[in-house]
Each structure stands twice: as C-alpha cells, then as structure tokens.
Length: 171
Image (cartoon, rainbow, N blue to C red; front, side):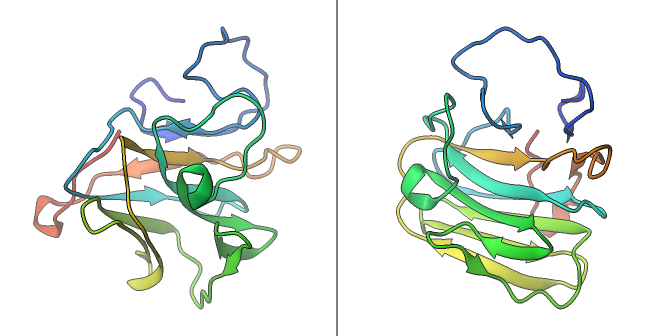
C-alpha cells in the first residue's frame, strides 16, 4: 500500500506486519480508508494490463481473518478478472461479456437504492450492477491479484475523477 493510500500491489517480498483486527490475514486485499453509510459515490480504478484483480465494496464488518469468498452473502459486492475472464462475484460466479479490455474501471455506489454498478471506462460500457439492501458502513474493496513469479505486479491505482463527472475520490 503506497504512503498516499492511492496504490496497492502484491509485491515480491513478504512484509512483517503486526496482526490486528483490521488486517486481512489470508488474502492480499485492502479496504478503502473512507466508509459510506448513505449517499452516492463514484470512483475509478486504473487496472492497466493486470492479469488478475478484484474491485468493489464490502461491509466494514466483513471478516478479515481466515479465508472468505467475496459474495454479496458475505458482505462483498465485487467484480473480478481471473484466468482471462471477467466475472461478477455472485454465487455461482456470473461471467461478464467484455468486448474491450478495461484499463480503468468505474464504480458507482447508490447506498439508498441498494446498487453498486461497474463500468468499463475505456469504452464507456456497463459491466454489471448488484442490487440489494445495504446496512452498516461500506468501504471500497481492492484485491490486486496474485504476484505469479513477478507478473501482475502493477498496482491498482485510485484515479482522480473530474468534479463535473460527479466523482468523489475514495482513498
């Protein structure tokens, strides 16, 4: 995680970090610093040419100890790129028809409407919308993917969104 908290990547050296309740211990993922209990928020994440990643929102109360599967039933509304395919992290996974590889993904959260929508900013297409009911604080979710022998090491980068686009930057 960069000092400015705008970039996250899976490096090639294990860091010796203290175990605390806010740290995931079995997966290389982080939650955004800002949480939301209402309103509408939009942010964009540069995924570049990464070969694997997950993005979305999670309940702040999500279990961070042990393995978990990112699904709405577990408090996570997430899309992913894995094994060359884009999927919504439903149960079972829902393949997404992507015609142009996104280098940037937009995420729009409408808390009161119970919607999280994902967009391919590269070709301005809609990828997927989760619908449901939210409770508690939601925070942006970032999983930079596996560092497979020095591949997929590029960071996920939170990008500034022009105010006229209705963006709220979520570090």
